[in-house]
Length: 336
Ligand SMILES: [Zn+2]
Image (cartoon, rainbow, N blue to C red; front, side, top):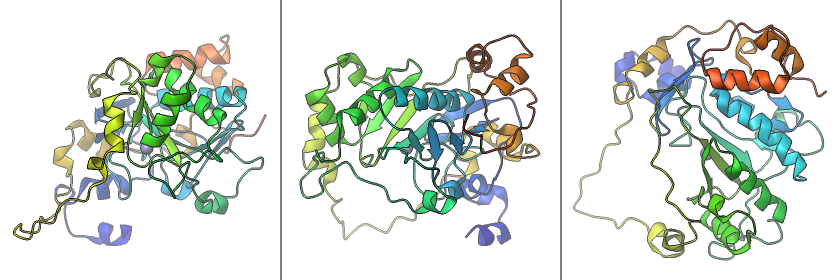
């Protein structure tokens, strides 16, 4: 499919944006900035999360969607540690974004600006998965498929609940998306801060993974935020709606209607800056733009010396600009 796309005589203006962004293997080496909205945008200066860390393993590596805003990658590192504190063995990471964000050839309407990440509801196994296992390990739904929109109580545990609520607890997290059945389960069982529950939003799918969305970073005027989450725990009519027929009803066929030709999102539909992002030069290698916030060696490289690793990571997050030159170290990052 990529080959036909490349061989196509169509100019960039005439090809769907997903083909253009889907063909990029590396990010644009530019000052880090998301442009546009979660579902219609792109990102300059994205960084990759290493395929392995002490508390995570990235899945489906062939998709090349381990790229995100450094704030997102830093959060995932932090979350992987916090998850282990909760008794969760570690995170299996699903898609974040493409190297330059943008629309994708498959899956996801959002994940376009490096500020969304999917986490499997399957805990990390006790061994390092091979590349093949990472492609093939099946998803496990948390739902009892023999019933309508019901959590499978033999699979869902209180640790799953605490994991989702931990994700919601970070101030930089805007929303956490889960299946309506999971949201309902949390509404019925969560004993902690109910206000945090409001950040957990019900949506189709998301029964074998949950989706973390962080806010637009400070000093990123091109990033279009989503409307604020309404106040309250969300265990209300907005949730009850999912348990009616309406969201699941098939569109009624209209025999009189002309078939609608699908209209692809084009580069011109995205913010202007995304053309620049698409055309931007690549770094020399993936290693050069692989995030290593948590490692002591990098902390030194980033800070020039006497800061603690944590402080250095924070400085990078706050600076929210392009990463300084990094001393290349091999990936995957060694387990300490
Ligand atoms: Zn997602």
